[in-house]
Image (cartoon, rainbow, N blue to C red; front, side):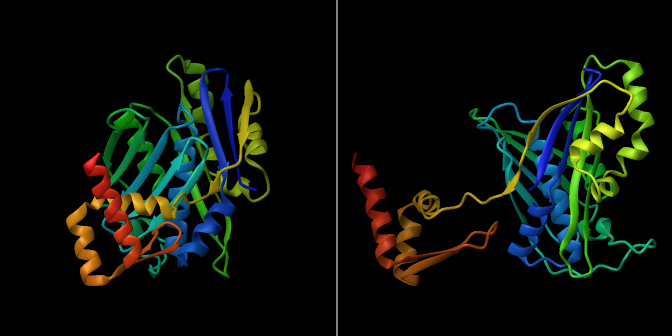
Length: 295
């Protein structure tokens, strides 16, 4: 079972750490990803889980979009405060030459000619939209840069996804450490001294849970585990939501669809679920739109 923990150190810095191995494997199976796409999508989902853990209200939602101009194309993940997250990658079948150290070259897969975009929907009239330039293509550094520049929140952020030889995900997860406004120089220095260990989070994850990793990383400091939750890869698409989308198209476009195609087939890009609507279904939606106009 995947896990996310929320913790606080010295009452001055917040910590969010997760193991999303099952979620990354679920995404790999849904999208039939090759290794470069598996790692890229896994890191994006881990980052989204960590960002969602910082949402204030239960109804809040968040969308993370990465488009660096690389061969994997746009990577997107959508989640909520309940840590229900779904992901999507435009090109799941991409081969990338390994880097000099023999690892998957994520920076080349993602690219550096584009932007990180974060949309926070907090139930207000307009969502908050933040956007920053992609600096490295490695995603963790890019998300930390986003937090600093767009939300004025300095942080240490690390993400990784390890792929087995059989292409399954061995481990996936991430960690964010963010100082609070009242954070003292003493606590900041203590955190900075642990930066190298924090960046080895994925190695620690091979043998420990997020809770035990965080406890070990910040041993000697006043570390408190505040809560533990279980994020899931879950798509919220449904036939009813697709029908609502059809109604938003308007009469002319729906009528044209009925006349030319005699129906429609819609595939959810997040879970690949297919929804079929025949001519009678579309005519029923047309009637509902017309009835609404006559109210």
